[in-house]
Image (cartoon, rainbow, N blue to C red; front, side, top):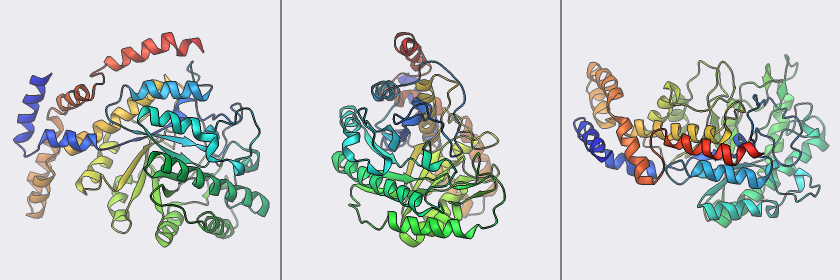
Length: 415
């Protein structure tokens, strides 16, 4: 393997790329891996409840996590097969309520102490999300923009409670916890009034963010959406709404790759937003015809995304999280496939001769630019990836799949 790597290093040196530096840069990236792939977005508040909110997990592959301990064990297995040190992203309804009835607006950091302890043992950092779905007060598809002041206040209190939980997580891990807010609010058919819900949402957000928390412990973000199941015609929290609110209030925005029109390029939005904002959050997903949350793979969309990040020297300004849930596959394997694909895409971008490409573009050599872009596609990235995995002490090639299948036989099949 080392011989293959040395050959690859020589090939990349010919176009001015330092593979050792690319690996070092990749090792500095932490992907925020989403907890909800492991249990089909069920949570532990009321696991048999319907998702709602434009969400749908399809498939019935055996072995999904049913308890916090099972979910942690599955995630731990996945992380053992992924190179690097990463993060784990929780939703509020994964709280450990210990059999008690606790309303979402009454959640406290104590309900997540087992997650905090586990993350510390695993060498992980935690991120967090309020949960605005799978709840009786969200059955009509509205939360922070609800016309009923009482329901609206309930969700405001939930969001405020979640920010405090995120702050506590950040304090415990001595690293900011990223708290991302997404709501399902919208109409299935054409609304007569697009204005009032957005005015109510702005008012609610003003209340949510009225409390100043320790910025060394928490980073807030707002996630938009184009449409969802049950909100095909109108989503209150659109991209334009949150971009405007985020810029006005200095709050990060989150771009989910499945939350835009299929012909829109999320990659193209990064340079525009980071021209005016310090940071951005990405939720990397793979929509197939719609926001279908397929497992992330190394496709053109993903490569375009990572190329924009690297070309803008923006790795330190872009927070990368994953967001998909597929119940038709082995759920642990889905985590591994998606996260390794995300890292492979970043490595591909880091191994491009960016300086030379920009130089030729600046001098008007567009022919050379295109030719070099194409030539680099067949350079031996795979040998560099294998070397990186070996150095990180994780399986190379398809060896990780053998471990997953053994885990399925000994653990998942017994559930």
